[in-house]
Structures are given as structure tokens and as C-alpha cells.
Length: 420
Image 1 (cartoon, rainbow, N blue to C red):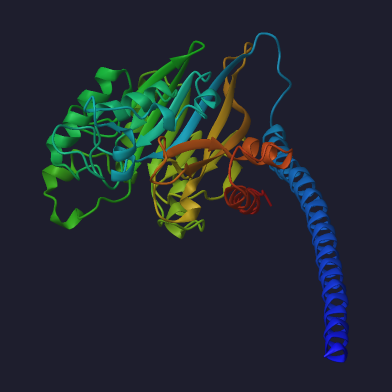
Image 2: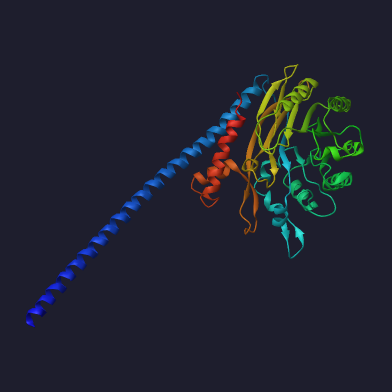
């Protein structure tokens, strides 16, 4: 029995030693794994910081390249600014749309009212200092049911409060709510304080002339098509300012009779969700430049398209933005979330009174969707400022996924807008 007890004690001792060694080995392996993981994570964090720093530098460089190219193209025919010259600042935004999701985001169940202001708070500072801010009101502001084609007056008021003060209603959705809807839209927008252009219900010349810094600027606007145009009567179609060479000629004559010193055309044209400019757009642009138009701002594609500076027959600069995207929308295509606030500076010579294009730049903006559960779901944000802030360490400003989207979109924007 004694021998068996000794054997049993020896077996237990071996088990204890093995157990201790096993425990130490396991702990050692775990420590190695932890240290290795920490090293890997630290290296990844270091590499990520290098990537963010590189992206921040690239963002700054991209913007400067485009502005330098634009300034060079414009300055080729510009003279030095004198103290007697007046500078007129204009801004342009793209299509202004209001979807059902935006309606839901703005609706307060308790008060039964709408408030869209949070959607514009982050970008209003980029446009509210301009003398004139133009855009395309591509949603009706009419009586009746609110949906993707019709929004409450509170939406238009939020757009106005953001800085937009002149809108066109000439677009492919002009007659989505009939002639009555078009008239009610005009009435509601004018009551809020917008200058409204785009229909011919009360005049044969759809021209608005705005005065800024003692300079008369004419705004002409056209759409090249209407949704379900074949189902509209001739009288209905005639209520909208449709593009034709005859209409352009008539409007230009009227604008000049009214003393216009600079002429801007806002036009709805091109193919949707593509940054490729169509041959029709180019042909129309050719005609407008030849006819004496000084500035062309395009809409409808819902994405940003190339810009260019041309010289007219008198050697003056004519700036063409084929599309500056949307101002606000929830269109499904990721490209449609990338938009521009376009800033245009005109100069009126104190010597001879001639008005010329002096400067163009822009602020890229992005429609941020914070998700269905967010209190303020949709917000317009400054793409460059937000991406730069994130890359500088303010990682709470947006998610990494959104930041990556901003960097990718800014790169594509740079490729689209480069002037060859």
C-alpha cells in the first residue's frame, strides 16, 4: 500500500509540474500574441496617420491646381483691377430637390410642422455674402399633397434663408403638377422674396434683370425638355420657357433693350447621372456664346460636369459650367451627393463701365445621410473642410466610411474639373 501511495504522489507531482509549465507556456504565448497585436495595431495606426496626412496634403493641392488653372484662363484677357472698379459677387447652386425622406426628416409630429433649416446650416455661410445667388427650384411649392414632386413652403423658405435669392422654374419637372402647380409655385416663391424666372404665363420674355453695384445683370433661363412632354398640350408647354434659338434671340433683344450690361443663361440640359457633356450641350453652348451670352450655368445631370472659359468674338471671357450638380437632394447615386457652390466675381470698370468676368472658384459640398434613426438625418457639409478636419485628427466629425467617400469624391471632382 505504501508503494502505491508513493506512486500516486509521484504522479500528482508530475501533473502539477506539467500544469504549471502548461500555464506558463499558455501565458507566454498570450503575451507574445498581445505584444505582436499591439505592434501590428500600432504600425497600422502609424500608417493610417501617414495616409491621412498625405490625403490632407493632396486635398489642398487638388483645389489649388483647379483654382490656379481657372485664374490663369481668366487673367489672360483681364487688366489689373483699379480702385474705381466695382466687384459684383454672384454664387450659383444646382438643382434644389425635396424627397419624401427629406419631408420625413423635417416633420415634427408634435407640432405638425416642417423645419428644414438643419439641412443647410453648415453651408449657408458660403453663399449668403454674395450679391446674387441663383439656383434651380426643381420641386413644386404648390398646394396639395407633399411628395417627391411637391414640397411645403417651409422648404423654400429654408432655401431662401440659406442665401439663395433667385431661382428658375424651367426644368423637366416644371409641369409635374400642371400649369396650376407652376403658377402656385411662382406665387409662393415670390411671396417669400425670391426673384423667379422660367415661365411665360404672364410675359413672352422670361427675363429677370437684377441690379448689383449699379450694374444691370440679365438672367435668362431655359429647359431643353419636359417629363412626359408628348402628353402635354401646346398651351401647357408654352407656359414654360423652352429652349429654342428663336426664344434666345427674342430674350437677348429684350434684355439689351432693358439696359442689361451682363447676361447669364441658366439652362436645363444634358443626360442625367453622367459627367460626360453631350454634343447637344456643346452645340447650344456654341450658339449662346456666339449670340452674346456672358455666363452659362447648366443643370439637370445631377452630377458635376466640366467647366471651361472661352473667349467670345470680342475677346471677352465667357464662363461655362455644364453642370454644378444638385444643391440638395437624396438621389440614390453616390455621384449625385457631390455638389458645388460656384462663386463668380464680376468686375465693372470704373473707367469705361465694361463688365467682365474677374474670378471663379467653388466650394464642394456633400449631402450627408446620418441614417434613419438620427434626429437630423440629412445635412449638407463642406467636403474639403470636413475631410481636412478629419485628417487633422477630428475623427468625431464624420465616420471613417464617410471620410473615405469624401476623399474619393474630391479626387474625382479634381479629375472632372481640370482645365486642359
